[in-house]
Length: 150
Length: 150
Image 1 (spheres, rainbow over the protein chains, first blue to last red):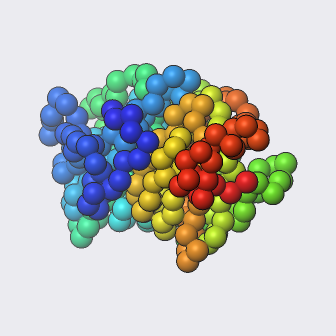
Image 2 (tube, rainbow over the protein chains, first blue to last red):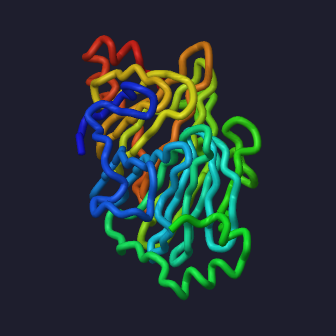
């Protein structure tokens, strides 16, 4: 991470010397059309990362949960998010808080990208994906069953 | 801070149940036309706050420094920032990192607001304002002297 004091945006949602990364380093088919950029990776007392994720039209993040919380702000476009058993309609500048140990998944619309900031602790546990039993429980709620992509 | 999982934007840069606060609780004449909203105040391992500040046209934040770092992202409008001895021209989505113990001040343009996110640790030291000697040193650099508002 650069220690410059000003990192200009160079094109829409692209920043100087900030690489566009794969969403997950290990690949996988449980997500679709999503990139990651690390905007801040601040050590010391803060110990936090601010990442920008962008989901292409029709794409989605991984359905997962973990012990750490996510603080999310949509900054581009619109979409939907599953958080627990709630499906939220998201517009630009909306905030989403994903509490610890809560299933969540973000989806873009079919017509435009969904870009969001996600604030996390630098030190955090690895996400868990749902077991077949977890999926069966999630699908008990019909709207959730229709929403999730696995 | 609400523990809801979705906090919609209700008007441009206003959010449901997120109060618009004074920039500083103790008042003062060392800032002008600036409000504060706390978007996330997340305890636990993260221990961080994400605040939204908005500076009205012609306004400015306090010229100050402190031990904690600021991670800033402009999300509305344009302006300028002093960080150390550098004056940065800021556009929407630009990033600014204020390192520890570094003089800084944000200014809106005269024609529109400057709105930015500022990420900090929940636990942080109190800002220091410049002494007369500090101001004299800052004014050694002519551009800085012209920029700062005290």
